[in-house]
Length: 291
Image 1 (cartoon, rainbow, N blue to C red):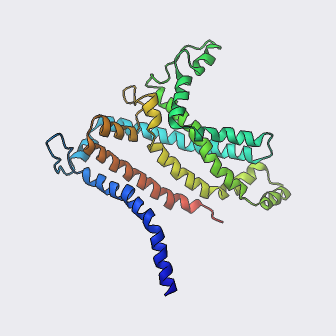
Image 2 (cartoon, rainbow, N blue to C red):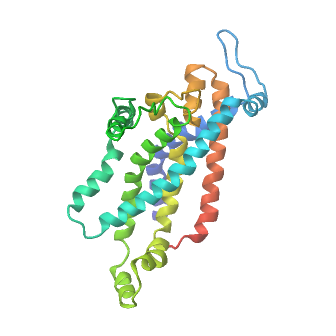
Image 3 (tube, rainbow, N blue to C red):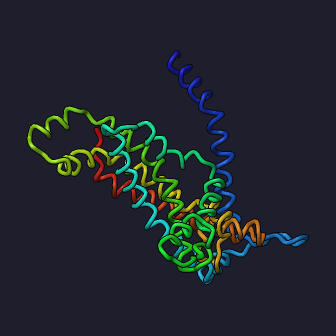
């Protein structure tokens, strides 16, 4: 009887969280899948069942494929670079460093800044002629560059902002993981004459793999959900060269008011993220060393 009462208490404690989870996550997800098979209601005209027409339209949409390509390049660059920088920064601030607390705060500061504030700061950096970057380049005779207006440069400019903001956030997790490694391992390696690189490659990095798995999954999600920076800095331009998937969904749903097609885009993005997450867990997890 006491065990049954504990079971009831446990479910009662979980009920509020489960209600919120289903109400704001599962139910909207199911509704989005259902809406993707219907047309968008227009005025007095109700939505009708269209089957796979929205998905057929998506496959023939050149803007979607350009945005998808932008997002692939964005993810392929931001994810490994952010993780590599985070590891380097964590290794540096974990050692004996003068002003270590200040350096840690400086690395983590971009993470706590509001996304809109970050976008406005970098817009000042990128302003042609008057921005900080062009001011520095002018000292060496460099010409003005329209970083956010050039189709060949705009995506790279957005990628730099994302790396600057995310690397410090990932650093915190790596720093916590480094501090959990027993000092005896480092002492034993020093006695055996192992170099720092050998110790990092054979001991430190394998022990960081659980953190790397967690960080990489978050990095993949972050690479798809970026909206604020795009909205403030470029609005997807020029000619959709800086538009990413979630911003395209936002434009489709709230600017063009095509909620059915936006639901279709959302389903595709969720499917892509699910496949990537499952792949990371089942493929990368084999190389993870848990203690």
